[in-house]
Amino acid sequence: MPTVIGISVTMAGFLILLFVSPLAASIMLLCCLVIMGVFLFSQYGEYNKLNRLCDDIDKILDGDDSISFDSYDEGDISLLKTEINKMTIRIREQNRALAKEKSFLQDSLADISHQLRTPLTSMSIILTMLRTKELSDPDRKRYIRDLSLLTEKTEWLIDTLLKLSSFEASAITMEKAKFNCKELLESATEPLMIMAELKGTHIGINAGEVKLYADFRWCCEAVKNIVKNCIEHSKTDSTIEITATENPLFVTIAIEGGNNRIEEKDFPHIFERFYKSDNVNHQGYGIGLALAKKIISAHDGVIKAENTDKGVRFTLIFNKE
Image (cartoon, rainbow, N blue to C red; front, side, top):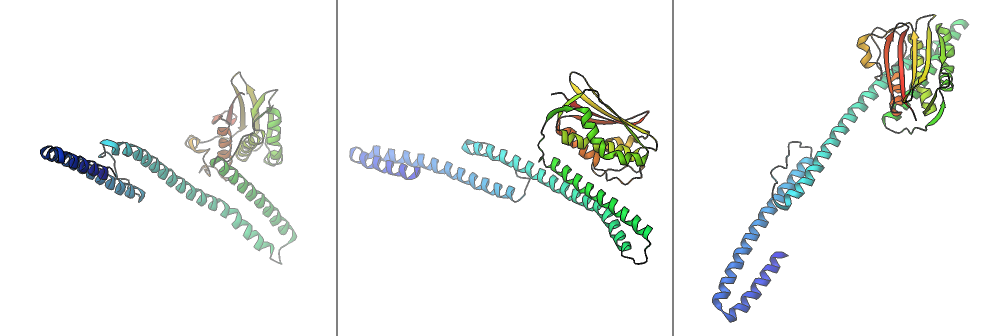
């Protein structure tokens, strides 16, 4: 369009000057042709840059990470280059994040499959044994009891994995309220009393009138998982003490005892999913502490573990309201 207008204006001016002064008309025509030639040459260069820019964008969309926009450093193309460069950086970051997420998902599915395979295989074997006609009543009762325990463990595993996945997908909303820590600790430990009694472990609670502003249900889940882990690793006739304290800034819940210890090499990994120490022989799945850490972190809190004279101490630190 600018070219057509330029030609029209030039011809009109040339015809007008031609009747006045043929020499002036010729000079004007020559100047206009030179100016138009320079303009068309510059437009041709811009057009080539745009074509090259489009080719580079196509290569980026095809996954070529070697493309750089540093050569586009003049005129309006430079402004376009800057915006496209920002877009390219963002796309590459998103691609890296998606690749990382895909790898994480594959590893998680493999871990979950492995964790479910063990109890399901045991359940299948027990069901096969129960079909045996020659099976005695005592053995049948024992197999039914084992099958019931495996079913409960599998339900807990699936439920915990779903909760953990919800936290990792940021699909959980905390419903915070103020409540008494003693009520929280009693609610968290009540389902574990039979387990503790069978293990010969005593659970003591000392919370006083300490109050906490948090999501009661999820904090209960976190404390329950930690206490469950302590019971599983505790020695016979040991004690687990749960204490809640506060200061002007923080509320602290300490879970300590069991007369057991964690190897120093295991401390960096105890809150990782599916991690189990080589020196520990138990039937846990290695996800209870991982879920507890997710819950505490969702409250902007801190959880840490350390060895003491009484065993392992887990310390949960929450900000005050």
